[in-house]
Amino acid sequence: MQNNTRTLFLAISHQVMRGALMLLSLVFIGHLMTATPAFAQKSEVEAPASSNSKATTTIVEKMTSSATDQFNSEREARLEDLRYKHLWIAYSLVWIIIFLFIRQTWQRSQAVRYRLDELKSRLVKLEESEEK
Amino acid sequence: MSNAGPKLTSSSKTPLMWMILGTIGMFLAHYLVFIYAPMESTMRAAQRIFYFHLPSAWLCYIGFIMCAGWSLRYLMTQKSEHDALALASAEVGLTFGVIVLTTGPLWARAAWGVWWKWEPRLTTMAILFLIFTCYWVIRSFGGDNTGIRRFGAVLAVLGAPNIFFVHIAVTRWRGDHPNNVGLEPEMRVVLYSCLLIFIILFSLLIRLRYRIHMDERTVTALSRRLSRIGG
Image 1 (tube, helix red, strand yellow):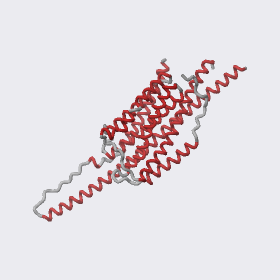
Image 2 (tube, rainbow over the protein chains, first blue to last red; image 1 turned 90 degrees about the vertical axis):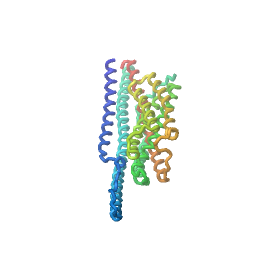
Image 3 (spheres, rainbow over the protein chains, first blue to last red; image 1 turned 90 degrees about the horizontal axis):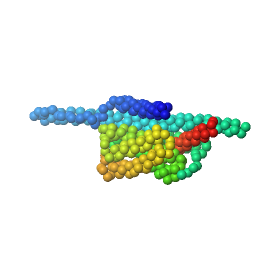
Image 4 (tube, chains in turn blue, green; image 1 turned 60 degrees about the vertical axis):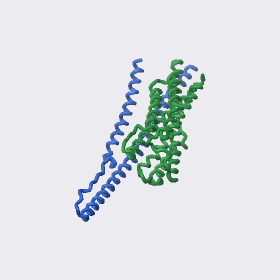
């Protein structure tokens, strides 16, 4: 009974540790994404108080417009960078998950096959000894 | 109650053809998703996550439906093969569920600005995933006896209808999750090709897991037989 409890505890601990390692690796990957989404930033560009002169107003408008355009293009570049990062992370995670599942399946298959072959050989030996 | 025991076999060979098809399919999927598929105008590169996310979601549903179906069959027939198929389906369904719940937030962060929203589709999907995780935990750590198998089978049968709520969540409860988005013809080709490739992978994985579960039952039966004989 104590052995069963111990085995169960070890098995659960093993699975919990594997899950925790997976979670930690996901958190680590998340921290690699250092770029702050541009949509989280506020884009407030206010024009300075205009003077009476129309020329000054026009110059200010032009400056504001070019600053806005530059900000938007930078924002778009950051967003594009973020999208590609997320795509590669998603792509990697898909194959990591599938690979881990296949690897665990193969390991379990090998263990079961080994055990099965061992039991079959014992059975054959037993039957042969009984015949004798 | 069936008295037929599991077949005594140590073969766990997987059809080579499935593996070759699966491998070719992987390379084809890479080409289709990253080269053939056109760039979507709004989400740009992040939209390509959709080609993994949607087939995984469908196969997750199919895995859970198969689990419920084989569980119901097991409850009727008490045959070990049906239970093994149910367990294998749940395991593979959960694997694809993990893919859905990791690729989804990655897309959501790029699209919505948050990793997760408690909106209907995501919430019901999380509940569905938790139900079948419970099934898997019970089957993995509860031992392999008739009582646990029946308990798990009932849980799977009762949990599977949640798939219907996941499916109608967006239309019925006005969620934010994309639904029935218009796709260009090239995008449809890529989506259905990826789905076909994932189906091949899905079938292969279920076959592998089913074989393992049947061999484990064989090991148990042989161990008991040897202990009775005194070997």
